[in-house]
Image (cartoon, rainbow, N blue to C red):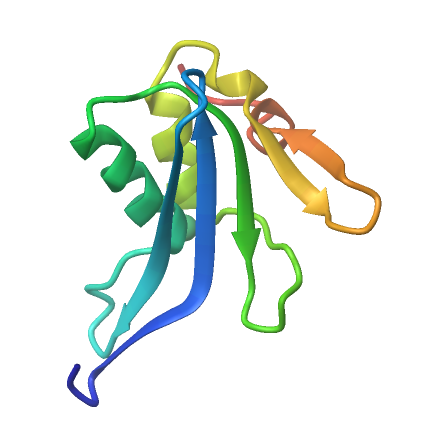
Length: 109
Ligand SMILES: [Zn+2]
């Protein structure tokens, strides 16, 4: 990869209603043309013909869990179904989760 692109600092894995797990890593570029790990995992899921996310975990470079950014939250919500109920791991020690609806309490649609 070129010096203008870095990948893999953040990783994400999601599980669908069928039990399948899809993963992705972030791609960071000099001109913001990259993509978050979550959206790469979602693209992987859609490519494989699935679309119903049940749970998501995001791993930050230090190994801690992270929360999806606004763009990733919006994309997951727009996937529809019961996306508002997607469980997102918030604390790897306590296994505390939050629902996507908690992160988008006043979603526009
Ligand atoms: Zn994101």
